[in-house]
Image (cartoon, rainbow, N blue to C red; front, side):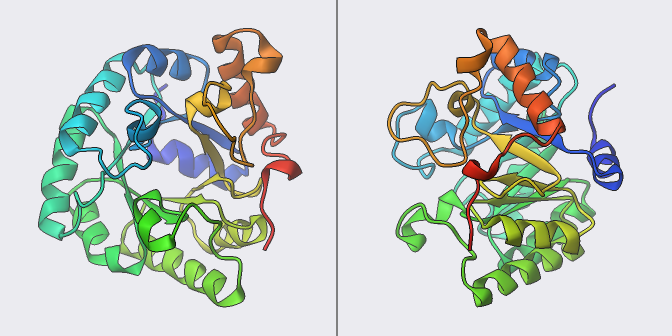
Length: 264
């Protein structure tokens, strides 16, 4: 059975956690989906882990379309979510045109980074049959505005505003909310405030799902590792075993653990 938006909603209603991982090619897409991971994200993180850039900003729409088409061919039943790259949804018209390209390439849902300003765009996409994931918290496309990769929503005002934005974007038509690098208590609060499934990365164990960059959870990323990352390959001996162990740990809510989360 293929995973759909309804599958994720049912997970949330039953209180069961679901897993997500990035993939950028057909081989990893097949391995990830056959391991039981529910969602494959073709992230613009490919700009860093594949292209060697220091941010996601250089990634183009043509590159995203190419990688989505590769993943779609390897996928064996996971829901395919695709990032809309930097400035590809700066206007509603651009968002509609570019989302159509990603959906034609094989995406089942698109992901946008931002806050309340995305309301009209999300509504327009939703009304035209494009499922949307709204990405809040640490949004890498805004790294230059943030002045670096920093935990978001630590003070009361910022936390309240993030809850407000999550509710606004859900009301506009967002089917999924993704929270990156926010305090665990805030993520839990947002997951309760919205009916949409909430996916976390560095957002504690109380979200409805978890996502990681596949190279991070396989211990392949050089340099300093983010706090929210666990190397599943080190304990499991093979890539296929590591992917299955990740899906199982998320499902059983043994990952993320306390050491992978942030406090306010």
